[in-house]
Image 1 (spheres, rainbow, N blue to C red):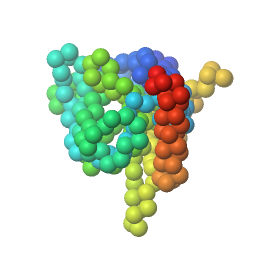
Image 2 (image 1 turned 120 degrees about the vertical axis):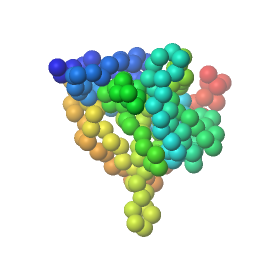
Image 3 (image 1 turned 90 degrees about the horizontal axis):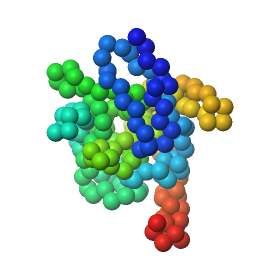
Length: 201
């Protein structure tokens, strides 16, 4: 049985998360509204670069399977992340095979260098990358040290509210590191200025 992507419609995180239990059926893409980097920074609670130290799947007291990712923070753009940040995201697969899968939610591997845009914590203490896979960009380095940002988004569909239609995202999107980081920093500065004008509200 194939489950339609429309079941996972999540336009603005962290508002409204749809869950699927991964059993015998296959799950199509997670559907989100396309966001540029300024929107990602504007919607996030935390934005930073970091290296993944460890990844483990856990089942806390409230019985929701989660993946716990520990990162060493190397550069902060927004929020109060310290030198280490523990990210808990919904879902994952336990050693006994039980698990939860949220289509479009990115995976994490030890040793990866990432630029992350994260939602505020839920009441369970979990967060989501803003815009699902849009909020996780992997930093790749060439032989000469030049950085490129890679967004793996093969499990995403983009919803267009004007046409009320969706289309599959390209499997990978590449960004120039220097240019995109400059936009992130400018968006963070603009957000700080707006907050100052509004009295911190």
